[in-house]
Length: 160
Ligand SMILES: [Zn+2]
Ligand SMILES: [Zn+2]
Image (cartoon, rainbow, N blue to C red):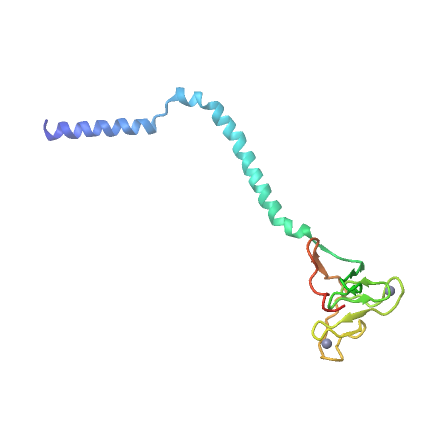
């Protein structure tokens, strides 16, 4: 066996191996056609499913958090006294907690009170500067009180 023969045999082997990948076996392709069709239908479905799940997960936090517009009833603490969240206006008479910015009780028309976030001292919600520690509580007309619909509410326990 000389060098040319050896090269020829290597070349023919290369061609043989390449033809397995390059030239398709049409019989096999037609046999696999149902699989291709199923994949063509299932793959987009799975893609949409994954996409939908991603969109759902991306939007989920917004759904579980809701904006509170009106007043809500304050919870009763372990000692039987209502728990008013710090920094939010509240009516002690009606046991209602209002969104930040509210000044008067919708039920009894009384001035609302607010607990200072810094020194926990109660005062009228009409006054935005704490007389005790000087902290200015920014009053926004638009309700910004946001809390998750599930789970315990932060704060309040030390106030009652
Ligand atoms: Zn009231
Ligand atoms: Zn204060």
